Length: 146
Image (tube, rainbow, N blue to C red; front, side):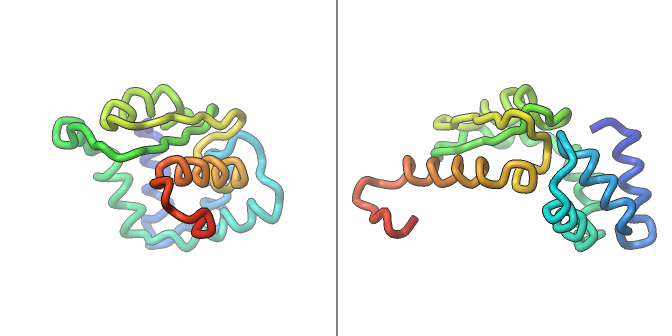
């Protein structure tokens, strides 16, 4: 994330909350295309409800942490999903930053989506997750559970 955008988002919570205009900017800036109105409204409301302490902690600290050396290799069946239009955490970033840390990982890229995948591509994201879970379960697990 570039410093100008980081500073802009820190200003949004300087008064302890994110207002509707700021939340709208965040949603619109993090989607590849304008969301359908009902989905966009929900996304904006969700951003408004974001905890200011968590928002600030992510921007000031969490997003700057580098855990590569400490993490090592994680041996869990892992699905990493990225939007093809996500400028900060798209396919290239996922291949470079996340994929190397999993011994059993698959990267899926959703074309035409950016950063807010559950809003931009809800069905596609859910289908990828469901397929991943089914493929990771032992064969003796009942499909009724899914």
